[in-house]
Amino acid sequence: MTQVRTRFAPSPTGFIHLGNIRSALYPWAYARANSGVFILRIEDTDVERSSQAAVDVILESMHWLGLDYDEGPYFQMQRMDRYKQVLAQMVERGLAYPCYMQSDELDALRERQMAARQKPRYDGTWRPEPGKTLPPVPPGVQPVTRFRNPLDGSVAWDDKVKGRIEISNGELDDLVIARPDGTPTYNFCVVVDDIDMTITHVIRGDDHVNNTPRQINIIRALGVEPPVYAHLPTVLNEQGEKMSKRQGAKAVTQYRDEGFLADAVVNYLARLGWSHGDDEIFSREQFVQWFNLDHLGRSPGQFDEAKLRWVNAQHIKSTPDGELAPLVLQQFERLGIDVPKDLRLIEAIALFKDRCATTVEIAEWLLPYAIDTAPMAQDLAAHVTDSVKPAIETLCRALAQCEWTKPAIQQAIKAAVAAHGLKMPQLAMAVRVLVYGRAQTPSIDAVLQLFPRETVLARLQRF
Image: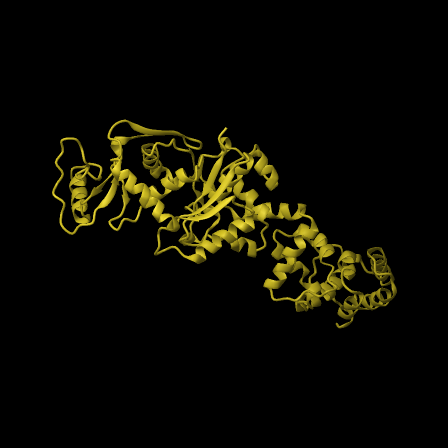
């Protein structure tokens, strides 16, 4: 059997968002599921809009999400000699020809066609045919090069998402494949790349469907069978519009900075256009094991950040605390906070992570262990009352002497509550506010045990 070879071919004309990166996820997964090859190709022929910064974000985003590629990155601008070589061969073989129709003539032709309620299209004025006399070559005009599209029949393919698609060749005019300066056009470069890189499966957004019949005809003219195509439905934003940076889409790397886990984002993106029964939460390994092209959805996927946060929370719960620790440290660094050496980070993550949807939230919960966070005045007034203060003094004496373990701390709190005729929440809330800075935390004995004894005593006594 032929080895599966897929590709991701982004244009570096702006930052890459989740809607873009999904077009990398599926071909990556299909290659991995079939022991194939995944290729990264940067389509940078739009020189004015392309930038190295955009390329860097593509590479950084793919690295973060673990979408490793086996070949590349290839850059189209570095392959210009190859494209021009194939162009020359096509002209020589009569598969393409120079066209001297200028833009004003083409505009006038289209106006006449629209006035006659015809589809605007190039009329083949410069297309060589047996017995046809071409117009005289206008002096000083550099021609474009057009592909000699078949006049009869149709072009068809069985799309793995959309099913059978068939287009009459009569609907397609002779496509410009090189500009007057000889620079090849997008559709031509894609064809040469896919042939040279022996791509077997093209998995891309359905905004390319209209390009596909033209590309198939060029591929076949060059004597090659086209790859399998799968055109993915659009990813919509939360307002139901196509996801784009103009509509507020965020760069993929922003989700990393906001504390999302790479495996959770992969999990969420996978479900935006593919399914495996009712499975919502799965690992990267399960995704690759299950993935095929038969379960790609036909309907647009709609992004929902609340759902992404829920998926991320599930992955945080199942991720070992030691793996979360360096990610939480990165969030402290982004906050500009030096983590004290005595912070029991892994134990603290274990205590708080079930309350959190992101590593940013974990870091925020752990802030009182890293810096002194002053209680809010209204919390002090509500919980550190005159009736509770004597119990706090009793507790301080007990905590100064007890073993620094959860059971011993819990026993000291219970003894202080009993000695002063209080209910447990009265003292526990006051202690939380004084030591931790918030009235709501996990079990107070577990919270205190993660602080150094000296810190707990100092914070209890200062008010």
